[in-house]
Length: 111
Image 1: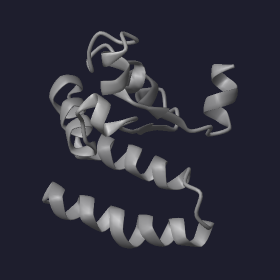
Image 2 (image 1 turned 180 degrees about the vertical axis):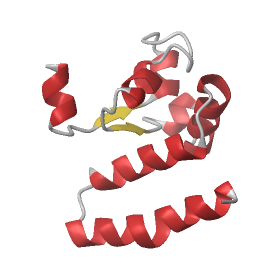
Image 3 (image 1 turned 90 degrees about the vertical axis):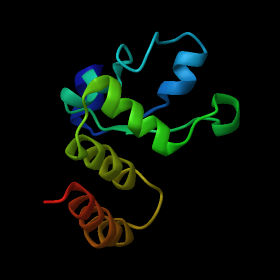
């Protein structure tokens, strides 16, 4: 099943803070998100319910950097994964990835 999900690029929407809050994971460091990303599954970072989990996309990403040693490249990959899996027309997805996401990550990474 895992090979099917990975090979067919099925998006896995991960909500680490929510999963920690509900006891599914002990911490960001022990959440399967980082491992699945390294195995090249199409994972995305999400907040689930921002108010109930007292989180934001900024916090979710910051915790992945702090607890899992993620880089801008890791964050860019999951951001692009989210756009590739979004429910907007294909050409619009490409335009956002190429015209907004990649230039923004390039700018903030200082490269």
